[in-house]
Length: 312
Image (cartoon, rainbow, N blue to C red; front, top):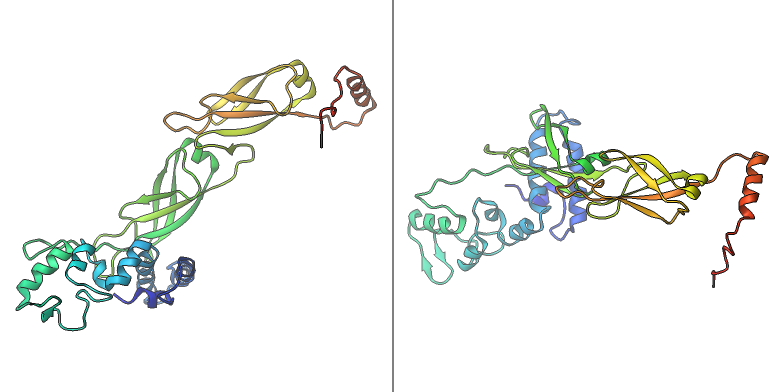
């Protein structure tokens, strides 16, 4: 294949950020949704193939050491090194692979070479070679917060190199986090020479929720406003949770630092997490004289020295 560094237009010393930026720039330019010119689809596949190699540190390391030969199905790096393979050449020298072999060995005819290739690449003259898979395809999708809490199904529409737009459904497991990657086998890019497609890698971003927040692997928290009277006397209130409405008993004298635990109302993994409710007493917005008179009576109540324990 064409040198992947040349395809992406980066130096061989480029770091991963530089490679990723180059890939995104070229992918946008040649994406079938934006570029209908002749050859754009093939160029898009070539760009994805190059990034599939250089975007994976392990694949890149092997390519830097062995070149194109490292991309063959079943390639065995240890066996290749044992045979004296070197950088960008399957046999570490520029001579004919049917000539002298490092270590003083000679090969006469293609039969012996097939055996060597078979041991290095997981195939031999008696084995059927596996088809080369296409490169993986990577996309980012932002999903609703509640889908990450309950688990759900979603779908994306992807333009294919041949111009088709395909709708692909996928399952979102409960508990997935931002940055999590779902792999859909066989939904990646087709190889240039024909064969099975690579995989589709979906990187998930979780949207924010106006009330719920994730605090642990499977626990959630939320603020619940209550009135001054509810805080003083206690009350039974109804609040929404990810799994439905729940009645909650507010103890008398509750303050804003009190946290109530609702077991099993958090993220719905096989053993569900918990939902923690922070009660937040809310002051009335009214400036009516009667409200101030009521506040004055509260001020005169026996609440002690509120700031007496503060020390600096």
